[in-house]
Length: 278
Image 1 (tube, rainbow, N blue to C red):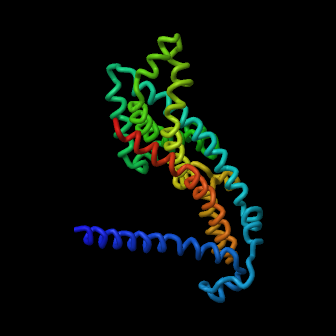
Image 2: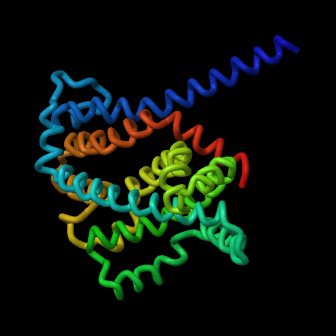
Image 3: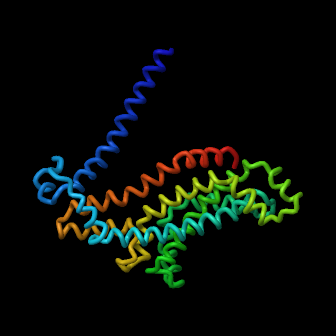
């Protein structure tokens, strides 16, 4: 039995290794293509560069507009993550700690909303955004992405807060602390893993968002990074400057990889602890 388990363990590790290689190889190919000249790229797409062309990254950042796209994305991220975290934390606190008639119906309504494909409501969402004069606006897009991030954030944070003993808050109430102060000073610090977890998920969702910016943003100077890269790809079909596109793609990958690498442990702890009790 022991040998059989070791045999399967080896097979699983080999399978995971192959899977990792299949993921890493395209990224490595993108990296060394971004360091070639266009002549080298067209001569042999598999050959390594003769001389590393870091100027491709400078060109992608300044001339290709990645600096503008990244700036727009950072603005949208800052606004949407801040609003989504604040609103979701307050809503989760109410749902997790206060018993009232509509408590469960509201929670289940939020849960059900996550099961509905967003594309089904995109027409009505566009009409609403248009009527509120929020189209072609970074603020408007930030508000929209905040609204789409709240359901999952509330779902995860509510479960996380229910794992925290109520006695912690009750002792604060005995000492004369108000609900607001207890929430801010006692509960939120204890919810740090859960808050980090929802922000990681929301960061990835907002950073990679493509359909909403494509519909709601019409000015190229206001494009976030996902739409900007798509627009750059269309331009390169006519300019044939593919190495600059590769460099731009590598630049857009760096924030996601760094963000996930830094907060990986918090993401795992936040999602597992929050899933214990719902």
